[in-house]
Image 1 (cartoon, helix red, strand yellow):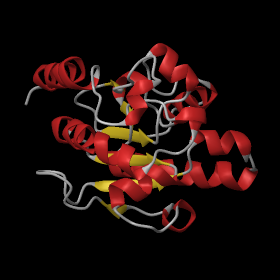
Image 2 (cartoon, one colour):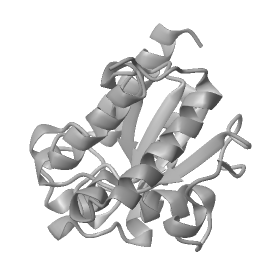
Image 3 (spheres, helix red, strand yellow):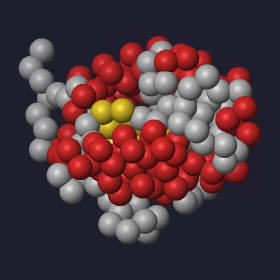
Image 4 (cartoon, rainbow, N blue to C red):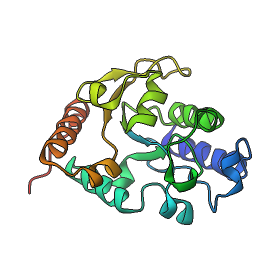
Length: 203
């Protein structure tokens, strides 16, 4: 598919399926669905866990404090939000910003798989435990998986073997903003940059 065809396919899925979705109980309290945004032809996709209050209010992913930090991370890689794609495991806000329940992830699973099939990224960065465990189909935690590339299982046609870099969620970094955690996340992102052939911007 061309970049325009990918963008059209994503927009059609959002408008015709996700916006009115009632597959799980999360639909009952949402203000907006949060489909995801960015470049439909991106080499890099970031996958978080679920929308928070700011995202539910705006219908856009990662627009609160965690989103500001993610934007800084993306800029440090020499990219912009417009050149990557950002989405979540679930498209509606879990109450109280809790982690998504298995049945909620399951209800949204087909949307995420199809997003990835349309975009066909060269690499995926999973942010935090829910997206890492969900996409990699593992119970192993983020602290043991981060720091090295994993391979996406056969979750859908054309996706098996896509490199996945698990790293800490920006919201976790805001709570635990230690030198070690910052250094670890930057090391993870540098591996992604190397795979994509990106040079860090000169400061």
